[in-house]
Image 1 (tube, rainbow, N blue to C red):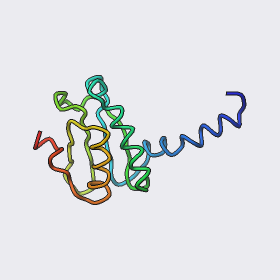
Image 2 (cartoon, rainbow, N blue to C red):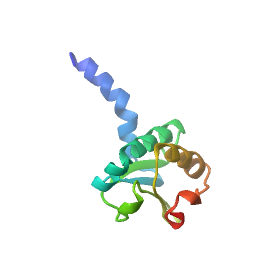
Image 3 (cartoon, helix red, strand yellow):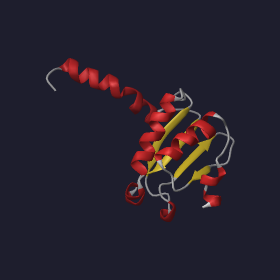
Length: 121
């Protein structure tokens, strides 16, 4: 970095991703990012959710965040989705590709993808 302007440009470029993770939306997507989750591939899953939610224009409605161990390490990467007045949905053995599908079908379309949930693992 050579100048304050360059730093400001980097800040502006990354702003959407940071705000998205810290947002106050009605829907929360929580990715398990403890050692077990990271070892199983949770980082690309988290990044995919952030990017796909942003691409889908859901940043005002959906908050993407991370947490520690969710407690079901054998099913990592694990993603929990919390929506007001609905039961929590737990997606297991997630990938970046599955994350994109969850954004499209569940977060955007309102349809839980049951084959990716804990009940079908």
